[in-house]
Image (cartoon, rainbow, N blue to C red; front, side):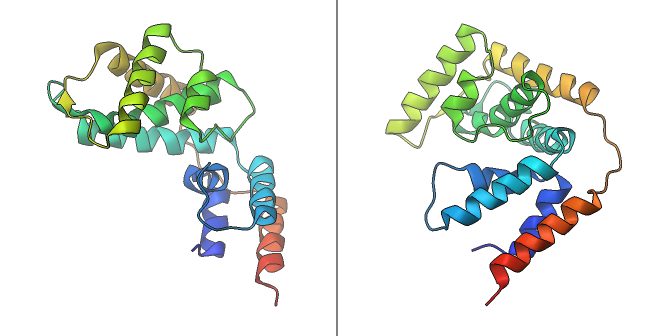
Length: 183
């Protein structure tokens, strides 16, 4: 369940998690009309820079937390930094867009990655499909370079800046909230 008011406030701040919920290929329960209206609000209200900063902070935190020892990482945790890095790359390659694909293979396909990275990711996804445990191993150099490079580019491209949502977008979020809370 969602706290709808909180989700809308987070959306207006540029929290990508709400957008990911709205675009997730996995829906356990929901209303398609709400999903469409929420996604329409997201596309209208959210600035790409705010979403990019969300992914940057998330990805850097995961990179620091899980990959300090690059000789022995949990391979499945590689996705924790790789997904934000690819979302940042996608946002950079699709100027003006603020909603990166949630479906990981689509994100990979639309991110113009070197073939060796695509092959590595495809192999990881195939292994993950048959086992939740992928073991441990060294952080692959090309993947680490890609992740770190995307984070560096994002810091330069989308510097932190104070931001408040436009009053019209706050009004649109309030209207959506009232629509769904009405008896």
